[in-house]
Image (cartoon, rainbow, N blue to C red; front, side):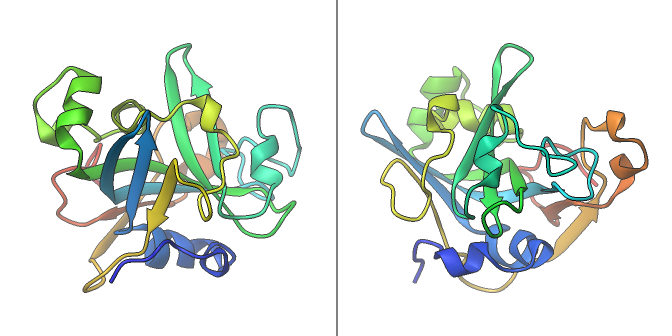
Length: 199
């Protein structure tokens, strides 16, 4: 039976959290009273101490990335290209700015609501990208810093059933990060039809 992921799981080792806690878990939102959810099928890990692709590198706190320096189990939502909201899960202890970008979901609850929000009918295209899934779930920067453990607007429920087969590859859209752009820190559920891009 699925339960809300506890703080202890957000304090585990970053790769363990990525592959064994969040991948296959279900992300829920209840925005404007509308419940939606999707199974996490793709994500990317970012580490503030060593990763030039991370907003907090090198452990530098700014007004934009301040949520990353909080305790694990909170949301970090930022705005890009003047149009897109990106939802991340803060992991680790306070002042250890690591986060996981949720890149794609397999829609499971409130699909009709997601379709209306996005103006499309194709279920496979509803949440197969980080900007798409935030639009579908109604997540914006006003949810930045939100508690994912004790809140009732956005939360994540644990994975149930058999652990999925996982594939890893380079992250997307981080060419500015030099050699760090090549790190195989994007993880997907192998064979999923709902990921943003194949590995």
